Image (cartoon, rainbow, N blue to C red):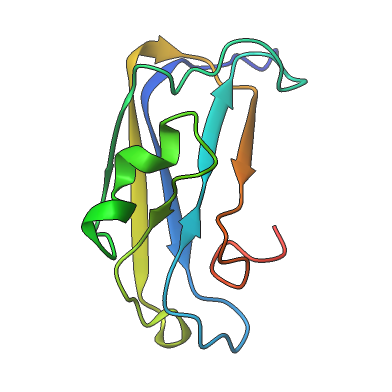
Length: 117
């Protein structure tokens, strides 16, 4: 039986607390999706729509996480990860694509989720 890749239009990151962390935010400068396994080529997030379960401030909203700029970033609302709470970040691509690789570029706040990714 052959493994068949499925194209999707929506991709979501779900952040959930882990080992004894007191961190209350998820953040990253850029999230990029690629059709190629090696992560080169067109960033499929260009032209996509980003939404999230919440954000820290007006300058850290979801679209900053896919704006092709590492000088801006997405940062979630305060979340009690250590007690099992979650937050999400969703990307709606212009059309369904098969994703074979992704990049997450950290925000300036390197102690925020995702850590040790």
